[in-house]
Image (cartoon, rainbow, N blue to C red; front, side, top):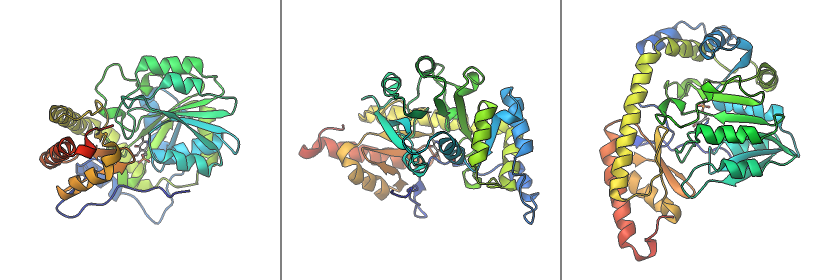
Length: 349
Ligand SMILES: Cc1ncc(COP(=O)(O)O)c(C=O)c1O
């Protein structure tokens, strides 16, 4: 197995746009909340206070919430609970690069369903790929790294097809950045299906990536199964306090998210104007389909002070500090011009 590879760090004068992080400083209230932790004590392993807050918000019981050290941890717990050797875990590809490793660790087999040519999940093909070995389906919306969304209608059609003894995880790590009214919104679907779990995180919109905290909302028996496979006490007290403080100051945080979403749409419009075949982005990142020219294109961005994430057939670039945009657009212009004038590099597939 290849180890999980993190986004590259950036030199002092460059922008790190390789890990879909939030560029804003933590709120003072979050810093104050963290300072109240007693680090000689273990954290509350059940994250009781946070689960109660989240339960209120989603109109469910605290038993229907599971909190983990990042939503990736909760996903790992769910995969370990649901799938074992001989079982299949189905998801679109390309998608979040942590999925293959988490599935392999559980001893299960990944089944990849290719995205459509416009970089979206093909939910009809995913439903058709279900076998009697499928235990879990992961749907990622907005999809990391292509930033495309699944529509509510597409998702509901998938749920109607999939037997209820197959767990469906809707990974919505970037939900707060979505402005498209037709996109699926897991928070509206909670309680509707006995096999649906919605995954959310404090890492992106709430800017707590460094503290590692995320959660799932779903039927209690499934959350209990996740709790059974979790490493005990992995969610630190600082993270729990910071998450609660973030919920208390949510409007300020969501105002920042709205600014990032506007910036994203502006970057998208500029890239389209430069001639890039970019899929319309819905997360806090854009996908440049550079095909076979990906490594070279990443180098051009790096030379312009932008650290991006090269992922096989494209570059994922986070919408970060406003000051990074000019450099990004200068670099993307340089790449597309060189592609147009290089005889061996005329297509962006
Ligand atoms: C689609 C998706 N899901 C889950 C995660 C995990 O986030 P975290 O573990 O920080 O909550 C990420 C992080 O990049 C992601 O892109």
